[in-house]
Image 1 (cartoon, rainbow over the protein chains, first blue to last red):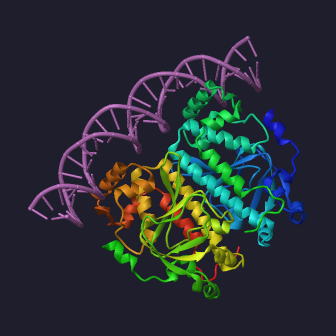
Image 2: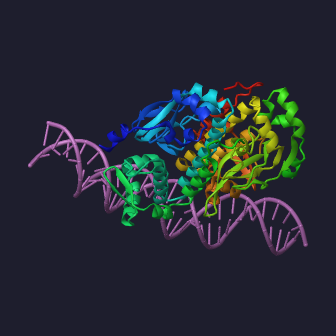
Image 3: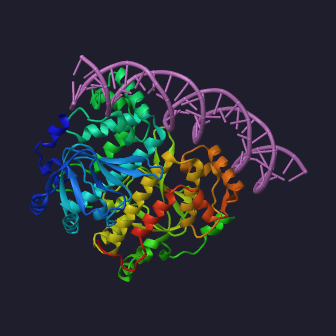
Length: 248
Length: 248
DNA sequence: CCGCCTCTGTTGGATACCGCACAGAGCCGA
DNA sequence: TCGGCTCTGTGCGGTATCCAACAGAGGCGG
């Protein structure tokens, strides 16, 4: 089973772009304390209001940040993969946030205690600058997601979501049912089926019982609204891979 | 005219909660460099992508952070008043953001050069901790706004918007037409008229040609969705007024 | 091989909001 | 005082999405 296989894949901390961008000096201090943890789909990392005393650097999994409403629906506000870190509230000083973090795509992450992260952050070195810029990228993603949910069709949102997910996974088929995607986009399952079916007819994706495969990335980008590109461009700008991030 | 009057009101930097929360030591370094600037409605502080080389601490004005779409609509993702600061991209390290900042309610702010703010931020003292926590509060507001736009009726959104605005202004009538409110919520003007009319019939607000007055705050909160309270509670938690903010 | 469960496809009616068009009402300046 | 502009009120048809119900299709275990 595909899921099981990916659970046993060997990963290294440096598959995470943030960790990879840090200088050796920081690696020496942090790597010994990073522990690899399996991230099965559905694993709840934080609930809204929980103290976030650990942070996670994904390598080959995807984590969704969800906000709940009183009506018991929840909406994915941003996603975090190997480009980022889950648990920004730790160094932002709030300790907790009003979102929940849940694993959306099975894989692995490296876990670090909040205390160690804060200590390193407070050295005001490479990690500090990097995490701040990452936080800004996250904010951009959140805002653009908000705009997208409001203005664009389910089909466009689906394209955006697929592209964001593909960027964060080493490779194809996404193991997601229409039902799960609908939870993420917070639309009806039927809406996702309809949009998927349309994309399939256009020859852009194919899917079968919980596996979605992109057939043509370029066409996916064409059919998508601008939201994907806005987020991608801004993230690339903010997190341009540098061995030694430029200080403010 | 109400607008003109408020333009000549005398303000002090300490009307801004962030500035007020800083210890004397920081005041001594920063206050000499803060200059009071009038903030007339419609003033554009940054455009998307602009280098934010100045930050603004509002005292009695409200600034909206707007994200535009390609279809030339724009949506208010968060609002900043005397509880915050406009220009977080400066210390987050991105220098620019993908939003625009525009004055929504006439008043004043204190302006500081980005360089001086960064210098103070990089001292890693009170301002540093305060601004990080403020940023997190801003993120919470953005996320909740996103959720609200998606799930709640125009009437509920209007209540939320009114409450957030009232919190940030010394006092009553908000000088806003339905048209302007509709731009903020990114709905039709008629939708705002309809919702306003309903709130009026319920005796909760009254309005007349560009002036909106809340008659009963408690009732406004009842009619609102949970979004206002979530944001308010979390902001209060993160920014609990302390003479010397607690370090991480 | 069969039954069951999950996943996908489809339909019909309801609804919130949109776009447009226009009418009345208050205010300001000529 | 009167014309014109801004602001608010209202009605009509269109549409994307929602809600509910159900039908077929594929896979897995007994």
